[in-house]
Length: 144
Figure 1 (cartoon, helix red, strand yellow):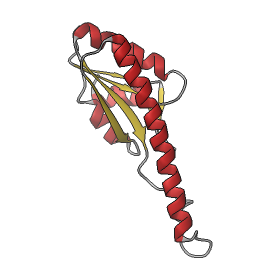
Figure 2: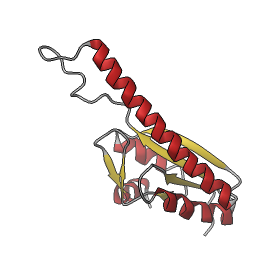
Figure 3: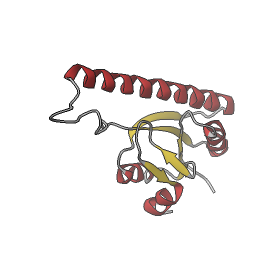
């Protein structure tokens, strides 16, 4: 089977390196483009935006939001470095990187429909979110 484009979910958790290396091999063999996908959350947690009595001051909300964004950016940078290293080691010619809002499963599934092969862990967690999506959901939702 030949692939034109491959999507691999990349994070900083155990298993990410193996997942990227597993995706790079068929990308190299088929001359396919390889896209790394980092799932992050764009939403603000409800405990930060409490209204009325007991609400945090605006400065505290801004600080919490900024810290969360910085932590997510740091993890995305580490994931990107892992991806770039694996792509370079494998000799993949065409590679792209996506940082994607993973708060809604439908959006993730819509993204995966654009690729011939999707490589995800059994359960993919979204950075700074309670949302997770399973490989089953992706497979069934993307049509294959």
